[in-house]
Length: 465
Image (cartoon, rainbow, N blue to C red; front, side, top):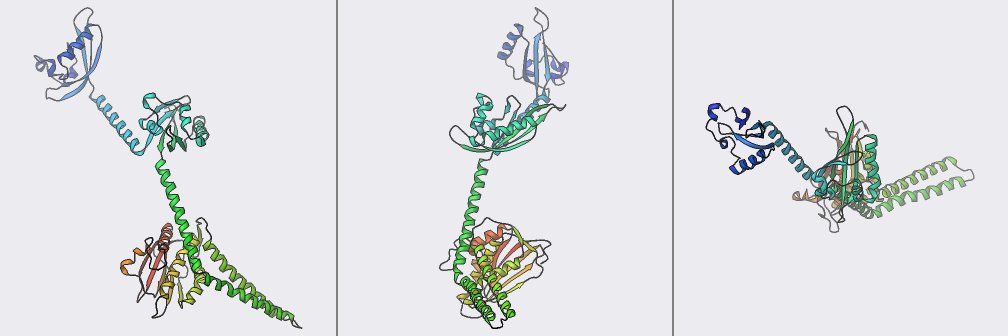
């Protein structure tokens, strides 16, 4: 047997003399050698891979090709080629494919390719996503469309056809129904592939199973709606507590309207009607009517159930509107309400009604807390101030019994309440609303007594109020 030198790992002639083939090819035993010999003698050219051993004991992969050297003789030629680089490349490719398959498995995604006529490639994970048997081969387009949800079938088919016709990228979400009735939400991203000379070859893409993400989004939306319902119920509950105060706020200007209307009639009923006095009475009627209308509008806005709406507004003005709604409640409980509102505050962007709900909660809590105290003045202070980080700091401080220092954080937990008839949801809802506006709500002890609740809200630059 004549063997090409490279396969012998730089062995010299002297090193080869007297050596057995097993010294260079430990993987070939006598049985294997005889089988190869019979195939070669039968006229077959045999190619196989094995490993050869160098003189230092290390081994390397070789590709061996054996065939007859001359017709009718027993001489044959054996060529061995070092395939170390090819084997390394194959191993790297195998590892890369293994990593890709593992990544697709963990990300629940699969790869595919197709042209105008048929599907060209499906990854193993894609079969799992669609519920097809890999041994049955790549499914046809009709088979695929049959598994697409009837409500998404036409839209999905048209999107894929448009990708082929217009050679453009495509991203589409759709549903599929497996034979066992399992519903899945999928997202496919496709992109045309071209040759080096710019000729269209195929469309390649990825399909991701987004069922769990979709369920999480639906659950998040359900929780969001539940929170919105709770917030609405909380506002309704507060407005119910303020019904007597609101009635007073509305009836007072209405009574004034009646008085001024009678005065205007009297001025006009004189032998020489006093038009100027009548005009003044009528202007007061308009003013009182507007006042009662504004109270009703503010109360209605807080009670009305509506989706969140973002707007830019003056938070100082929003605070003044809340104090009007709570004015009678404060007077009834002998609470003195003061405001220290910073000039030139930046505008707030958010849901005006929700943020007023937070302030309404805090003010009512403070008034009710002070209503239980019999010593000292009952003072409520509402403050606003800008911060260095373009936030607005809002504070509601009272002189009531205060909050146990160990409860300062727990009061924001759901169902935690210090009221005998409270549900313990008000402050939890307030913190949720402030958090949704990228702010923070917390509580501290007020000095010399009482509690102070503070929250921050990001401000819009350029307000200059």
